[in-house]
Image 1: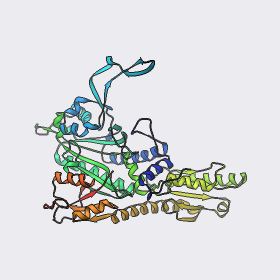
Image 2: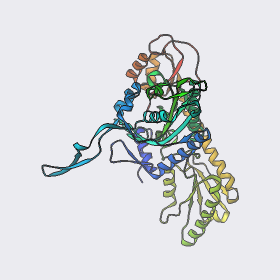
Image 3: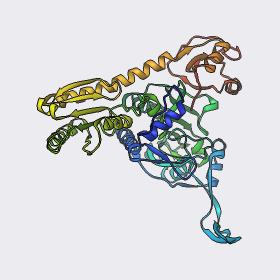
Image 4: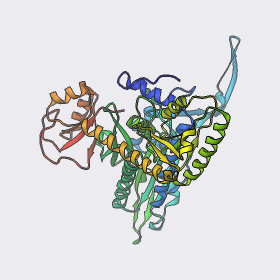
Length: 492
């Protein structure tokens, strides 16, 4: 069992070690891509189920749109193509040709198969979706359209890290069409609140909601909103975004509707998304030097029962009891796994399940069986106590809820302890030459000043928080009058 690097020694290496130890993902033969292993994909499936239920509760439906987008589509929305031009992978041919050069056989694109129009492998789907909406929308009766897509996308990243920034990743992308600007803005903020709820209530990850600056706005959006989380190395991670697209895409693709008075108007649009990056955020918010730590509400396996025995007779008895307990607990809390693998020491099994982040371990040996109890151990703080069989159906859910709340409280305290109100440039520089964190600082609102801060310190404005100090002051960088405090941090 390979050692996990300590966070204090090499945080980046620790992150990779946790992914490997928990068997979440592997690097693939394609640079920048990853193979998501069953343990990692189980987390993504739970993310999908939870969000999908919430989306449908709010009236959204799922659809699927093509992976390939005609190159001409991107050119229709100028800001959009500029924003994604450096990240696009292009399909130019549809057939390979085998050739032999200097006695070596290889394959090349067949010159006779060159496409008349090249295709972009989708970096996002606004253009292909809005081309379709043009065919679906004629009158106000066709609105709103509330569609979500679960898909993969490709963005040609130069510096990659599993889950956080990969060339191909999985996500959901919502794309909605509305009759008024007010309806579009309400949808944008509603979905941002869904992401806040999911991050905090399900992932136990505190976030700050706010508006992105113009420099950080999604390409083609009127306004972009985000949720920002703090990782254990005091860096920020953008966990999800929601975009008010105004009428930009509707005008680019001529998507209009006739209102009740017969007037023809362009529709109003939104898009919003969360990707497998959230799994990276989950790892870095809660995990420790022993491996993965998962909040119970997102964990695929809620508890593992480890039977302990010395001989075949004891094995039969404790395994039978463990199976019975698991069957009784499953309807109450969800999946409970029984680890009946033979010729493995209990301590080895404990360590393995710790690494995989299962929230609760239940130990069951012959003495426990005789006493009619299990030893219940929590993954995150190792609190351990005996629980009678008869009480387990109430004690385990209570312990899972305690863990969920504990993890959120710990993450909140860590974030709050590393959040500072800073008013001088010297203090700002000192913070980011040291431990880093969230800095609430006055800013003048000038994009050039924002870029200058980033060039000097690699610190960006994460967002303009909805809840913030409304006092006036001087910009922390240039000294000009401030529009208020904003959230600065180094980020992933």
